[in-house]
Length: 214
Image (cartoon, rainbow, N blue to C red):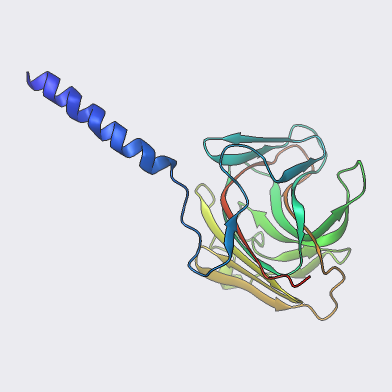
């Protein structure tokens, strides 16, 4: 009898816990936030290049399977926006979140856009800004280089408003930069896998707040 009661209780707990795990995170409190990822498939996204982008356990899983770059970009373009997501670095390799991005037709080649850096290794400038033919534009301050959680999920809040770019990693503002010479002003948001075939990244709970005035 005790065994039967234990089994019934265990089944009840599993039934209650499963729906809770399946529920997406509530968007940030401000109005205007919408989900960019439905946790089921890649609706609203476009693959660029030959790397692997799949949905596993409610997250986007990007894996480098060639030595080339790979991207997963939004179908829509965004000028000014806030973006909230979580990422986890599963292995070595480099990644990033591009904004104002465009690509050469039929190739995994960026023709415009900047990226907020992601690297699992502390001291490798996660949250820093790179690109648009200018190499590194800004790094986090030294005291903010170790905010990243190398083997866990990280909260990433990115704000692009005109020529001001802000990155908040795990609750810490690591970059707040006003670009004196911006080169791109509109384009896609894109998740990146760096060349070399070592990229192994997961992204989930992706929300955007579009501030563009078109």
